[in-house]
Image: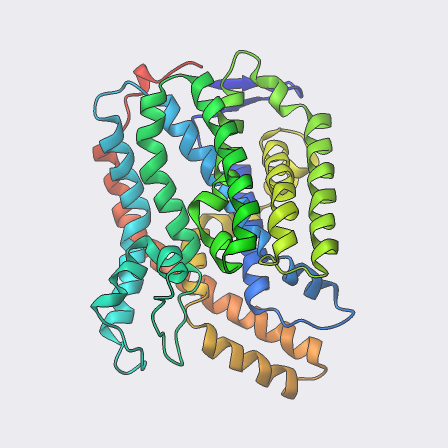
Length: 380
């Protein structure tokens, strides 16, 4: 369907939207900085790096938006769920299994003591095994702590897809999104007082509000008055209120750490709002955000964001030592740290590009065997 926006330019919600690649690029960029850019006083990039964990929320909101839209648009088609999961599998599994396979094959030389007990962690259960205290030992050279977010998304797909089919209508899906958002906020508010902070930070049911906010926007845009959901003034107010709540959470926590209790209580509600607002402006042709997200460099990063996210953290222990060395041996610390981060970014991006074309792309081409029936896709 094409949506006539307030700017007069239509947005086709069933075609590839280039500005969303740019949004992915921003998300992976800040996540990378969060993991690797050294924290230094009076360095503004260090502040951005400290806040980089919010890139995961951007990914969640965007994922919820795209997945919910696809599911709704294809409701009622023969074999719709089979096609959905087949296409998701072809997109996500090949390079993921390739990475895990390398870790298993070279676990000996890399001093990573894996066993059958670790299958749950790598089978998209990283957030669950972590909550149960069953996280594998990765040894001195590898790190897989970032797999928890991929686990959250995969678990969401498995539950949300059949639920959307059962709900059947746009209004019921929207109401379920709103109820689910409320439940996630409530569960997070309870969990911070009874569970270790990393548990509500990583659990599906305490993080599903970001995914469902994206789903709510997807359904809102597909309604009779969908254009109202892209009102620039409303979206800017949403971003402003969200950022204020985020600042309250940070001030209350006395920290920019995303796992602090008060950040989980208040800051994440703010993230829901401002991330959804940014997504809305990204979709709105002519907006400043839309123009920024259509920048070629960001779109390039966004194209390879999945592989880049998957690869970038794996060699974290080695990269961490390299950054410390660079800070101490290459000019002032901020120069050495910046050069080291840029070097590691180039390496990770190169690996992501190669793996995309060598591993991901051949399987993506197989999606043609699981095409949706475009004639029977819903108009609204």
